[in-house]
Amino acid sequence: MPNEPMFRKMTEADWEAFHAFDRSAFPDDSMSEEFFFRRLERDGFYSLDVGEEIVGQLIIAPFGENEGHLGRIAIAPTHQGKGYGKYLMRKAMELFKEQGYRRVHLYTQDHNTIAQGLYKQFGFEKSGTSWHYFVPLDTLSPSGEYHCQPVQENEIDSVGERYESLPSLQIRRLLEFPENPVLILKDSEGNLKGACRFTPSFPGCFPFEVDEPGGFDDFIFGLTPYTLPDFDYVRVTFVNNEKLAIICNQRGYKLHHRLYKMTAEI
Image (cartoon, rainbow, N blue to C red):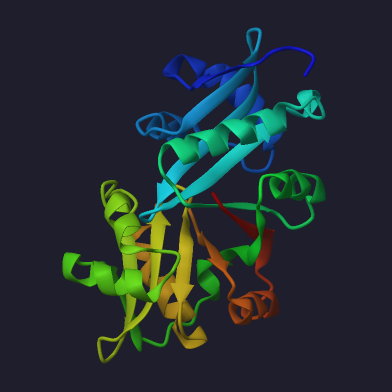
């Protein structure tokens, strides 16, 4: 590395510098000011500085009982190829080990072979495929055979056992932020058929689980009471559900990105 970087926690005073950095790193998916300040309320949000300039960011979080999630890692385009990405990865893995995690997962663009190569150096291997679609609300034809509702305390464990993407401890963590509800889908007999974590300000679901394609429209329609009036669509992100991806493609929904899930044992 040409200059020794400084790794530190992000602070409120960083917003303007961070925003400029983030727009260059993620021009199509930069972080909103509201989300920036809300993310600062939790641990795991870091900056990488060279001099007075933010050149990198790292976001990590716990997932379930013994797993960590590497949510975001990025280097400014003008500073790529200088070893800063590898530096951030080393820091991330050190933090995960210090916190006692046994496994870490992340998501990366399917075409970003450079990033995938970096992650493989740290033991990550592909473990799934994720799709992120925009679903216009006016395209839905709900059957009324399924209904969407907030998860109840006595349902958390059964949801966690059914869906790997929503382990029970993770659901309880998510419920600490009631503005982003965890919702479930049930059929007319009360059987569990889906689950998601919904962020109204996005607006979107990640993760998004639905067992039966016939329940897709009902589930999305059931989210409308939670959406903000400025939006006429919902984003859905789901993993290893190729049947649902085929349906979304057939309907002509916009694919925002396709990602590979990568996992490492530590």
